Image (cartoon, rainbow, N blue to C red; front, side, top):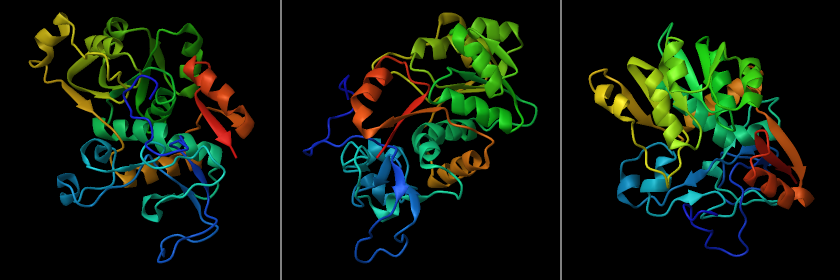
Length: 297
């Protein structure tokens, strides 16, 4: 929103926050799929208009609706978000939380974890393939853990010295700084690009093996994505694929939540009180939070 990519909410007061999790305290007339006391999360996309060409295709509720639906219900963007003590949400747009999963761990999984898991699933790594994750941040720390806990040899790509040891703690067996170093280390069959630098994503393809796939899970929408000449010249001959990903399917969100609830993947969060919202926003803007700021009301 601060860069003008996402529109500011059209309602007043504007209530932001798109990863809310909490307990149902009331249900509207006719609601049968949720009850008072249920523990639920509210994803980014709560619903669609039901009348446009996108809705006529009867696709699963996904991030694609944010782009293609004529009037999507987007939490914190087109409908009020979760930075409040109470939130009115569409019952059909909520997801039940597994037993034992805390609200503070559920919240980042509803977006960053969901995206990272969808990227991993979209890449469809096969047995004995090597998975590389570019960027160790809100999405990347999930992606490294998802790949490692699924049994794949996992490589982390980061230029940040302070994140190298963290990447190993998360499950990476090898840490490199860029695509050239990845290639020197034998390359990877899958690259999950989670950072905001399109140039770094393109550079990482120098280490992509023949037949490999790079999934762009995090991009800067205001920056061009251009392959370096030494990559673009061989890209087609090497049968490599560039894939995009968003929130793909509620079933994949359920999978991500179950994995986190099992303890095999642990979100890294910093907790803030409602009175600390301004401080949380400022620290996020400066990149000082590891890796998701969660506000408790």
